[in-house]
Image 1 (cartoon, rainbow over the protein chains, first blue to last red):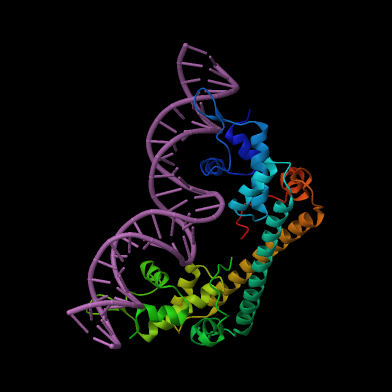
Image 2 (image 1 turned 135 degrees about the horizontal axis):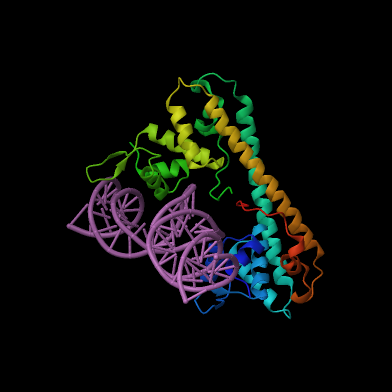
Length: 142
Length: 142
DNA sequence: CCTTGAAGCTATAGTAGCTGTAGCTCTTAT
DNA sequence: ATAAGAGCTACAGCTACTATAGCTTCAAGG
């Protein structure tokens, strides 16, 4: 039997985070000690490790919920898991592409700045200048 | 004189977002019509465009506050603006590096999956397997 | 048995940066 | 005069946690 602190230490999650996962139904409600403290088994530890590892790979909690569900049913087709992972890969690639564009624009901005006062600062000029805007991007640039 | 809707259309910001910027002091409180509706001038439009463009480059609002302040004082040294931009560039590069690592792990995971049931799915196996964890990463991966 | 300090408990609020909703009022064209 | 569309305030919700306050429990040492 593990305490919540042990789970935290073993997985790198914060104690509050574990309670949060319980609250949103990602972790099951564990047993309690006589005094009301949470007591976990090894299966809980594994589940939390799975969640944390998935989070480190950037999966959103909803996707993790699906992955856990698949993991709980060994007889199902693994195509679903595969497609969640592929979706996440596409997401990561999208973000990278957007960041690449930002990086280039920032480098250009910085590269053109020749010092002096803010009145002739290229950085501020670029930010002010409407005409050089990136294409509209309403998504998070994350 | 522009309405809030006009500003929104011209900058790509949502109406609520403009009101939000006012609320947090990023946009000034504008004048009002007889009936109490916001009325903006061209300077407001420029300021909002500056904010949106900076957001598109991923600058956090605090950084934008500083950039706007610099932009409002043409006599100051532009080194500050430059260093904010460099900080942002480093941030972008960091995120890209982290995403690159995620991308590789996702690709490996997906590449190894040979179909079948979830019980022998490599994707789920990798997520379950403690020993193959990425180095601990407590930052946002975003 | 008693104390003490670490760890746990609940509940609530805060983070970033918006976005959406409800229920109203204003503007403007016809 | 009316009606559509835009604007108003105030507040809740989003993601995924994180932090705080004020309390209780646990485990070890004396």
